[in-house]
Length: 288
Image (cartoon, rainbow, N blue to C red):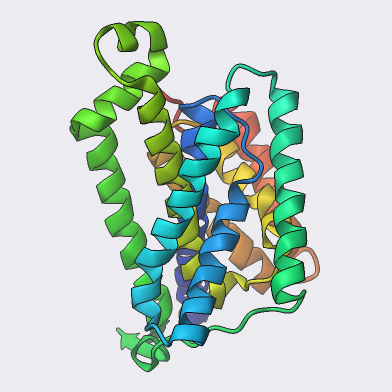
């Protein structure tokens, strides 16, 4: 019984870590850049397919594909921000939603045309398979790897946003674009790089999540609600808020599906309602 309980908690934390890694970029674009980007999952889809193609066509090792998935998604995000997204920064939220959901459907159709509708397999290294026994409890090695990766990424994000000149430029540009430009900050470039960073993290999460979440062309639509829940419950524009929300929701989602499988799929939505009633601005609201 104890082993099952610990296993559920561990799997929930690993699942939540993956949700956070993909969702944190959406938190940045929604909370800091004030853009409702429902196409965020498309960048995760791109990262996943980059990993699959590099492994299948070129024989690149799985771990080596992950930074390439990050770079590919970041580059595409940078280009789209420069050419399309920035035209809608001052638009109404509805316009942003319609644009980004339309882009999502285009990506889904394109991926279906190129790769077909089926799930894409991924072959992770043998040393990432199996389990390790800790205090008599078997823990999945790949899920441990996921958690460790998210710990490193979260620490790096905190350092970038809170402790670097670039992070200060992001915060200043969001609070007052005119004043920031007057101080010599290239606001346009800051926004482009910030959007690219969020897109790259989504691509990294998409590559890491193939073995856990699966990968098919409908991925952006299937998990869109999950990413929005993480950001809404955690608080847009923060890092710690979505992290706490993703871990909580991941644990309750896995626990619900394990202990009450008949209604397990609805547990995460019940948790969302309760948390939003208790914290309408999110678990951790962004400082003004």
